[in-house]
Length: 256
Image (cartoon, rainbow, N blue to C red; front, side, top):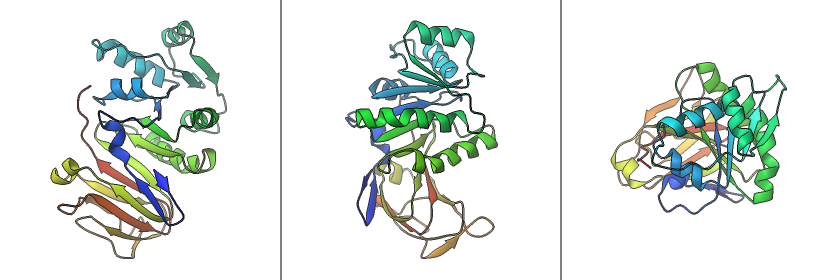
């Protein structure tokens, strides 16, 4: 993500490219890991962080789905550890992972994890976080994860981008202003879905979508742009919004 006073520019799928050289942190939440490129994404990260039961999920993936690849151990484990198994904690200790207990029950483990991670991002000059979390199952947890993305704006440096990545979708939070989101040609040609989800009344204009918005008032109970896709031959989507809005898009992940 690059940002100036007038425009924020995104290339969200660059981290899935084979030759990506840009540093990022990877955060694993307590959901099954179904991303086929997870091994590469994990090993190439500058910081590897498992959140509570996310450590169980990492070890499950390591033992059942990654038999032909050596995965680096996590750098950091955090949470209240109500979901972390004894076996997983023994593994973390044996690998000398940094273990940070965050017992506060007024915030989710994911939110607390970003507070733990923030100074490490600054120390390593890391500007991006990939959050591994499937977007199926418990709706309350899905909404809590989105809420944490909102809260991240006050936890992390303003230039830090946080991306929610699942096996079939990628989501980013757009702040008020103008955004340019670069879209790979295979996503456009494949007519993958995308959507713009407001969480309060927002006036939104777009370019590059099949069904564009033109200073449209978007809100729950009114207009919400879902099941959209891209204009033929476009290579980017422009979004102008006066409020925070979630941009979510369908993706395909290749094998490691």
